[in-house]
Length: 107
Image (cartoon, rainbow, N blue to C red; front, side, top):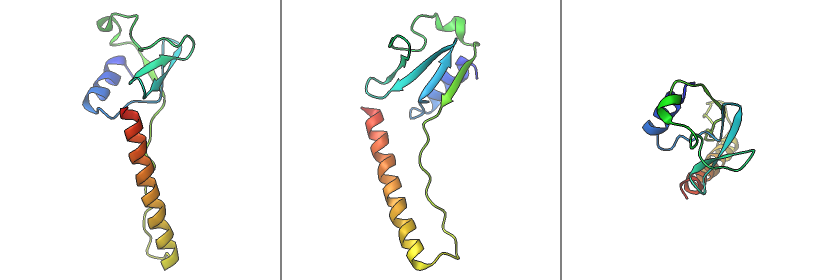
């Protein structure tokens, strides 16, 4: 993916922040506490801090690990009543974990 595509995706979806990104051979990890990326090698902040952005817009960036939500179970008509109760409880837990994850990323 090109840098401009990543920036557009992040601009259009304020929640979208990949956990790990590789740019010019350096891996950056998203730090939700500071709301920016850290260079894994030197702990410098910001992916593009050392570059003139308009000069790198067409350069390639690799999304290594995306931040994915846990998906709910899908109900199947053949499930027994107890299975449905387990599914409902697990889905409730999944929604709560996703909510807490989003809140921690916003901080």
